[in-house]
Image 1 (cartoon, rainbow, N blue to C red):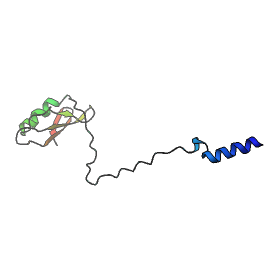
Image 2 (cartoon, rainbow, N blue to C red; image 1 turned 120 degrees about the vertical axis):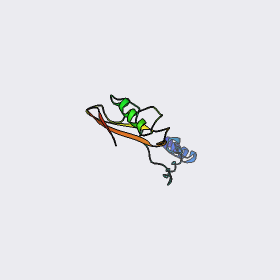
Image 3 (tube, rainbow, N blue to C red; image 1 turned 135 degrees about the vertical axis):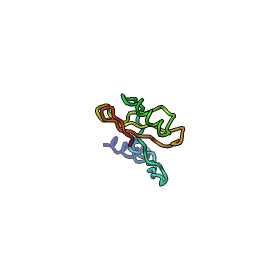
Image 4 (spheres, one colour; image 1 turned 30 degrees about the horizontal axis):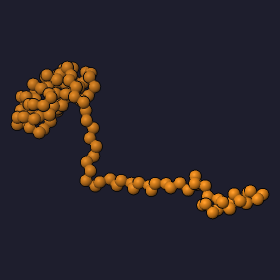
Length: 108
């Protein structure tokens, strides 16, 4: 019994067991969304399709040239949509889009 009293006194004097007094790091402040932050933009990898050359020719006739060419932005199939960035010509800075159904393409 004396041992128990001695242990209790030692615990009280020494401040208790160190495992109960771990210092926790202060919580990180929550990042507030910036008011002028741009929304996330999904990028589409460049893929050629069966009508890429046709769409590039159509774009060139409209004054859209340069860049990687006409990329397929839908799944391959009977109806496909192509997009081409215009870097040169009178449509510089714009996007040329075309819809091709069974290889018959029309500008969108």
